[in-house]
Length: 300
Length: 324
Image (cartoon, rainbow over all chains, first blue to last red; front, side, top):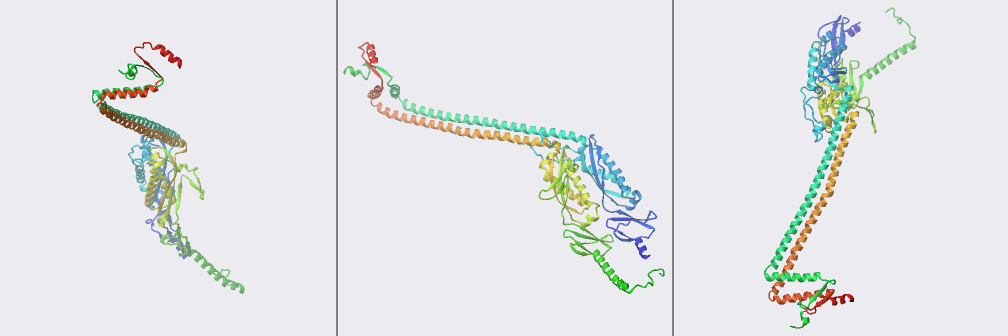
């Protein structure tokens, strides 16, 4: 008998439990939130166990329109905790009741906030400057549009509104996140097409850049070639001209000293010309009047 | 008690002996059960967390340990074991040639980038339990919670980057940002996890646009090729032209030297001649003339000498030509 009464009045509370004692279905006293061995009135009082840990809530994946009329697929999650077991017991009875209320509250808030923002606001968090991956930034599309609110703020706002609506339920939502966010299947095809055309544009740009760069190098080659050749020609002509000038000056200095030297020069040159131009095919008719043969006739 | 059927029942003596033995056996069995429930082993990578009537009392190290039977309970937490979660793929069979499966996990890996493009990101989160108390008593389903945190965080980080960053330059930066952010969330949630590493695995454009991304790579290669070809053509032509230019200039310099030296030589020779010539111009001139003709005339073919008195030279010419 003693054993039975003891077994009926003693109960343990685990680290992650909290217990509400009810008497004929009516809660009595404060909730028991500290772990250990506890006692209650046997038979007439009953224990109702609740979780003290953070619990999971996973939103039903949903298709929602954004403010810019884009349909996106949104999957959310939250973590929540029973902070007031008594209130929780009165208002929601059990976890199933809580989940159903959380579905209503969080899904509703998510729908509202997504519908009030453009898609970028839900995707992006900050206005950070992207790291460029190529020098042709504008073609590669390494730019991000300016956002006003951002994912983090939207999550925080949904969390705040949801908590306000859940404030009398004895629970607190600790964190709310947009887990997955994506285009709906039908839109994805169009996005792929856009991505493809974007990539092809970039590819064309690269090709054209290559051709342009090659033409530039080709031009440089022609320029350098002509420059080198003409500079060499100019330099050579200068050198030769200067040499010609010097030679002319030297000749003039030697030959143009006096009337006698001029005379001698033309005489010597004529003689040289004879030597160079006469050969065996030449026929010469010499008069005995000439300097060479005048003595043929006889000494004068 | 009088109703007890065993009361006053006379047992046979051999049964009595069995009964006393039975008590001993019972005691031994009880002792074994007590020992069995009191003693427990904690593995080398584990920590044992003990609760009494549900309340945390102590943690014990690896080895053989004792607890009070029934009222104390032990939870074993593998604190030293590195655990991992895979996203976008699953390891089918780990081994020398590990097999992976990607099929069916596209929902996990397909995500929106900041410029509203799509990318397939696969990653691994390696973690360890570093606070067994939090791990056991703070969050229900800590592993599932970590999965949720990882997915949400990765999407948030990728959502702030361009598709190019995600696919190329930003990989390590994304991994470290996600690592940091997941650790912060774990601490906020009191999950009792320490994140050891976040590793990005395959990061690819979605299958339908892979070709287009490859086309960009090809075009980039093509660009490099065109530039290299032009450069090699430049290198083929220009150094040779430089050499040829040098040649032209050297030749000109050679010409110049020759021209000047010739001039100097001729001038000096002329000067020498001249200085003698002016001493006796007539004789010298005549001498030079005669010496020249002396050299020249023997080389000539026909030599005809006429006298102004012998008027007709034609017959003579005729005769000479016939002789030939």
